Image 1: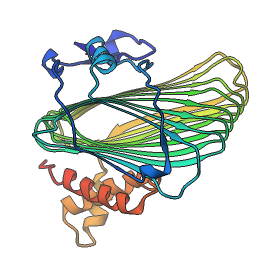
Image 2: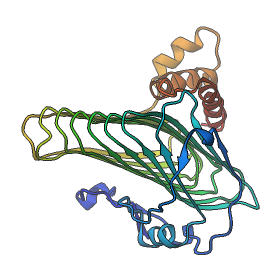
Image 3: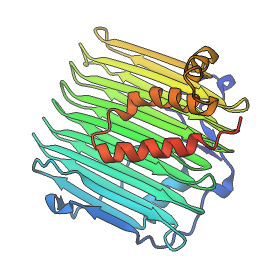
Length: 351
């Protein structure tokens, strides 16, 4: 089946318009999921209104399942400032191995919020989810989403956001997981001086397939839309990156940038990337870049001359490049945990 179709179709020769996966990836019967732990939820109120509509489309079967058969739905209204982050931990195990969830955050006017969502598990996992943020005028939301799964898992996540005037959304996605690993990210910059920053870090190995489909639509004047993605592929892993920044009519003086870097840590890993800028407005500033390659032998030799092994030198170089994203993680303890996971994932490289 075809999933995660790009909003802008390119020539078929690129082979990147959609993710092609086996039909068996879809699990039609969803069981209960009970391993949810919410920290600092007392700082926020839960909305009772439920939202069944969403713009991020993965594929008909997955979208219908999310709409009609979700086994978890949470809605949070963040209406006061706090230094404590709301933390949602989803721990998958043999008794809670399937999660189809809708999680919505409403960040009210002139309010600052920090949110951490962690999806972790071992064994065979099925995850089909949606995370939505609505940032009202002058609001600020700092978000970290972590996925850490084994290579026999299916991990599908949609991120859908609306950012109003003078609001700031900083979205950080750290992804370590799944044989089929699909992300769809959409931000609508609806007001003047709106800011939406997406930073993604990923490591994939084995026979994993990663498909990243990112889109930011800029409507308000003097707004900023940024996408930064960096990752590493081991084994026979494959990755597609499709990034689109769309400057809509009326968004004068707005800026946008895309920067994508993929490190190939094995001879058989493959990466495809297609960053795109679309524009129907004259007075805007957009730029994009994409690069793929191996860690330089000269760089490795220099570090190894200081007494480190090749494997240690390689991990040092990769983690240094990853720091561009990791330094944006606001929680220091979580940052250290992520560095440990990176170490573990990179240690699986036997090439």
